[in-house]
Image (cartoon, rainbow, N blue to C red; front, side, top):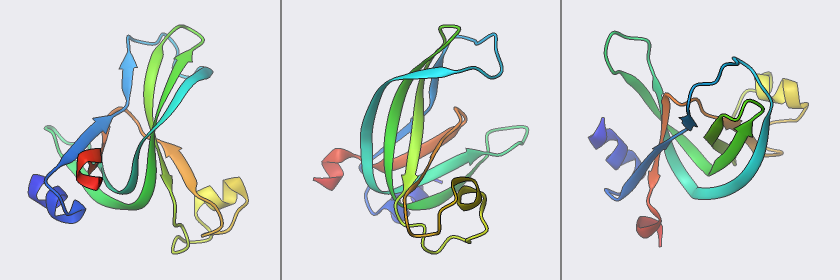
Length: 132
């Protein structure tokens, strides 16, 4: 898995990061207030999604040109979250009937599509030192 990441990202100087949740929330769904948004990467990345399996297995794929943000939020019950958000910059090759385009009422390639990642998903990207 590591060799795949390094070869796809073209460097051995990488960072891996995931969404962080402080404490246990008593609510399944709740409103959050964004406190801070920080861009942490701009360029190609890789995302690894946890697969439901008896031991650690992840499905990893290249995310293409993205901007990655860390969004600090606080829930109404006080739960603090540092949530990863990935914005796909080029969606021109995505299917026009895909859920993001239907929900947002936009066409592929016209606007970046952003989404949050769960805390069992990992984003890997070249470190800032590797891209300078």
